Each structure stands twice: as C-alpha cells, then as structure tokens.
Image 1 (tube, rainbow, N blue to C red):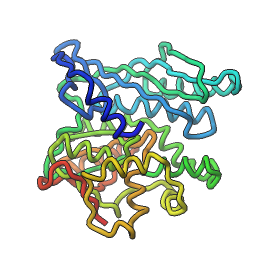
Image 2: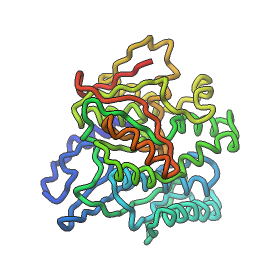
Image 3: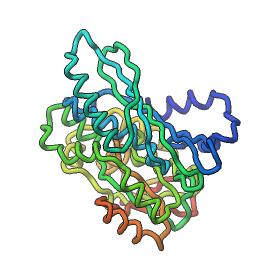
Length: 330
C-alpha cells in the first residue's frame, strides 16, 4: 500500500491515550512499543508481502528478515514470531509453501527467536511474513525523531532491491546476477543495531517500501530537521543503476515520488538526474538501517559496524534550516 493511501486511512483512527504505549506520540514509529515494567517493554511489528523472487526458500528468508527488521530499528531483540501465510493450495504445490516456511524459520532461529505458530488463508497468490514480538529497554530504544542539526546520516545496506527484483521478474537478469542483493535482503540488521547501541545514535529507521526518500522524510519531519542526501554517495547493488536506466522501475517508485514531492527539494536538473531520483525513491525490501549520529561519534559508529562485519556509508547530514524537508544534492 502506498504512503498516500495509508495516510488517508490512519488519519481517521482515534488517538490511543494509554501512557504505557511509548510510541503513541510517534507518527512514524517502526514498531509498537508497550511498557510492561519500569525497565522492560514489548516491541511488536508485523509485515508480509507477495514474492519478490521466484525461489521459495529465498523468499522465506527475505520476508522473515524484513519482518524482523522493525524490531531491530527500535533497538529491540526478537523473542517470538507468528507465520502469516496466504497460499493458492489448489494451484501451487505445497512443496513451495514448505520451502517458504523453512526459509523463514531458519532466519528466525538465526535471530535467536522462535516461531510459535501462525495463521494461513487460501489466497490467489502466495503471501508470507511474520508477526514478531520482542523486548526493548525503554531507556535505550531507538527512535526516528531524535536527529539533531549537524548529525551525519549513515546507511548500512546498498540500495536498488526494488529495481533489481523487477528486472529479475522481467527476465532482464538471472538469479545469479543479483545474488549480492538477495544476500543483502536476507541479512539481518541485528549486528548493525548492536553497533548503534554501543556507540549511541540520535535516530534510526529501517529502509523499506517508502524508499530512502520516504524514510529520510519521516526522520526529517519527526525530528524537525532538514535531511540532506548526497546522491553521489549512495551505495548501490550491482546492476541497479543499469537496470534503472533500462526502465526496470517498480510501481512503488512512482508512488513514492508523488507522495514525497512536496517535501523534496533538488539542487539540480530533474531531467538529467532521473535515474538518481528513481534510485532514491526505489521501494526496498529488507533494506538497511539509517542512523542519524553526531559528528564526533560517526567514526566510532563506522568502526563498530566494521567490527560487527557490517559496512556503514555516510550519505548525508541533518541541518536546522527548512525543517521537514529532504534536500537532494548531486
């Protein structure tokens, strides 16, 4: 569902006043956080979608990693997961579903959590994901509303998964040509979160369906800062730029462009940078974490990420002027 459609629905819902719901004031919270004791809170999220790849095992791995990501974006640790399944049993072999669930369960176990059950329905096409519950220290939870002017923005995974999976489905690329992106989507964000908690960051979110543009805009609005993105510094998966140039653009990219147009400013010709704009708005599946970290801690964060086997890419900064805006620099 696009951000515009979702916003129209959510704005009509009544406000939750429970003081134990720590995210009740956070419009763009990545997960729901509910305090159950002075030093412990539940962190919960749910996500599921149609296959982004044809291989059912890879799909299960990627969908599970994507579902777990919101827990890590909040600074929490997953404990349990429930499978959510839609499947056309009369049209597709159950062996496919077994492989999806196997991939998902192995990823949950890698996260140190356990699958405790689930729910399934007959559907016209496969859908899979997880409802995940974890724990978080209320005083150490990560939020997307704490970015400060001068902060550096650090991204932990390359971009381009929406474009590459579109190219894969369209027969423009083979699975072995996008293996790097498949492995990236299936990788957990747990180690990146650990690095952030060790160093201390001001804000965090994970990059998923609204693209880097959308999630950066959420940080900008929630933190009342301007977010500057240097397009030349964006890390990309192999072949992402090439496939964007050949028109392998998913529909979600256009929705993201349109919805975030009012908060986006460009210091270059749109016509000459159309591919860069498509990449920044590309809807990601199981993307990396985006941190806003003070300048004096940036080097320490990059080092902590490296020690965890992760890579951090400095892609921009936060500024005081024009709060709520995303400025794209060539």
